[in-house]
Amino acid sequence: MKIIHFPEDGYASNSYLLVSGGEAAAVDPSIDAEALISAAGENGAEIRLIILTHGHFDHMLSLDDLRDKTGAPVLIGAGDGGFLTDPTLNLFSQALGQNTAFAPAERLLSDGDEIELGEEKLTVLSTPGHTPGSCCFTFDGGLITGDTLFHMSVGRCDLPGGDGKELKASIERLKTLPPDLTIYPGHGPISTLEKQINFNPFMNGEI
Ligand SMILES: [Zn+2]
Image 1 (tube, protein in one colour):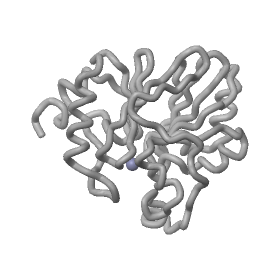
Image 2 (image 1 turned 135 degrees about the vertical axis):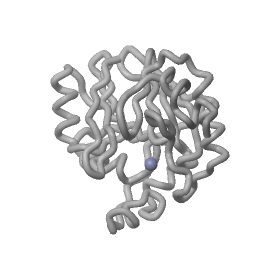
Image 3 (image 1 turned 45 degrees about the vertical axis):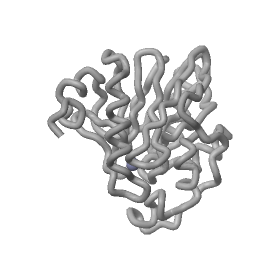
Image 4 (image 1 turned 90 degrees about the vertical axis):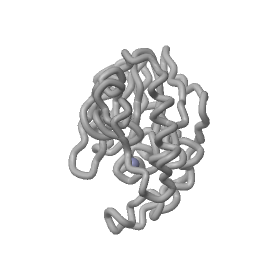
């Protein structure tokens, strides 16, 4: 799996493009849709999937544009399905004063689901806490963590649908994964799970 990172910028969270065997998946499309489409093309791939780690505005600023231009289906954790269609839950109204609602997702994800991409696959881990339907995604060598786990921090649990107890349980679950996984968070730098287990205060027992 080739991973292309588009760093967060302004309101836009980190966006990622995953490429395998001529197929690409856009994860949390926040930067300009054309940039994602041309990056896929430069890597000999077409965007076949749009994967959302959760349903917050800063992770889907270019969702409509990318959906229109690629026709790719949108995948999101089942618990966040309603966030797409609700500007209060997706925070567009609070953050940007916009009444933005999207068409429903084409596929709602549950724990253990597999997502095929080219010659590889992603496995869905349901990791509620930041939002009810927050998901992480594992693949060979990597872990996409959305706003559940960051380098040296974790996501907020005080937004609509957030739950501190669930977030703690989700973080504990991530600690059981192979530590050599590279983590690709929704905000901040790319890191490794091992660094978080050792030094992230939300993982090493300090908090
Ligand atoms: Zn979020």
